[in-house]
Length: 259
Image (cartoon, rainbow, N blue to C red; front, side, top):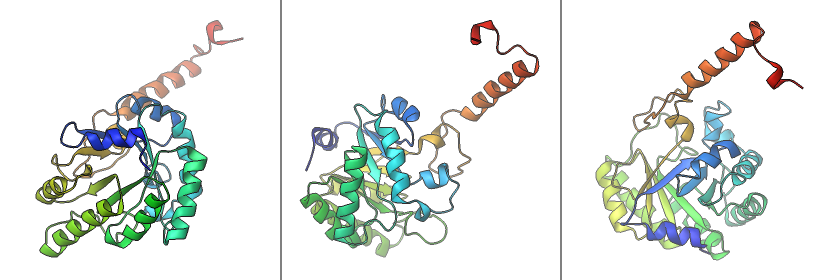
């Protein structure tokens, strides 16, 4: 079932680039909501907030709590929640957990990883009026070893095309392409009627997504596709340093900040 926000996202294809950013709390969500078309509560919170070495350690309860916080800060953007690892292994499990996610968080849609492998699940969710965003290319929940770009070999290229088409045919309203080669990203984006959101997948996608903490310089991410737009760590360090100095010198709290 497509709500008006999803319809607007789909209409942006070939007309206006789609902006997608992550948020894990109300405070960040309020800021991101002013600029993004899509706010994603990604299971990337596992590494960003909890220092996990894999998103597989993120569970549904964690995702629900963070999404409830983000929901309070999102008023206009489309709010999407990542369904974590082992929460959509079959149709019944996927439907049960997706319904819970939407009921508990009031999010607009769910995101699942995989292409052909999950098409029956996507179709089942969509049939039951749950909007689904897909995710192919590098899929963090199932990848083994180091992250690397996808689409170099003919075998990989064929798989990407099949995965993308399978998701569209199953009813997904959009697809994240992660670390796919530029020419493949361009061809898939042209092939599909639904929008593609790239992350390390070139300017040819219909939109782009990054982890907000990465672009703020809050993380030490050294990934090719991550651009840091500001070093917020320096600003935080300066504020904390000033606080420490004023406490030590008894300049804080003054009467103004006391009862």
